[in-house]
Length: 204
Image 1 (tube, rainbow, N blue to C red):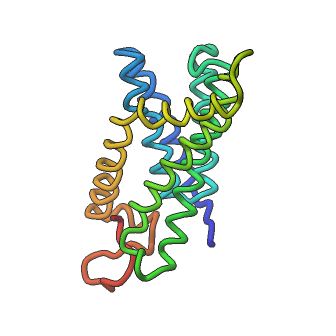
Image 2: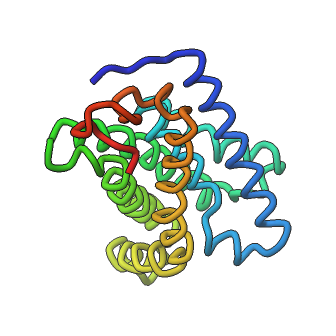
Image 3: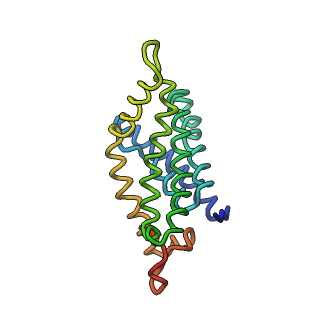
């Protein structure tokens, strides 16, 4: 797997991390419950993993909640029960999205849908990792880790259903728009453009 830390990719990673923090702040300003439902911080990190690769995606996932935590004076996400699971979750989003896309590109049966398949797996992996880490902070005197884990897994998927739907719909649309505008090819050289080999991987 080739990893290129180009100026474009690094700057894009920093920009997407900033966008994630701003989006989260905007949603929280309107309604905290709305922010939890739509998970706005997830979008830029998932995009970063797909566009800039697994390692920059991982970095974006780690620094984004840290920046949010520091910029809000430790208020959001709260430490430790909110911040630590979110760091693991977003890091998993970014890394898994980039890694899975690379793996799916190697298979001719999946390469045309590499980004979408990578996105779905990353969304599942991140929420599961958040649950495994977050369950430690949910344990009470009368509850076991596995009971807390089951509750956390269920909550991670049911409480963010709107965000899951939007991520599956909007992220491929964003990638398609970037592809049509000739921008995506700068990040994903394996993405076909008009007149190129149709068997190559697409942004879908």
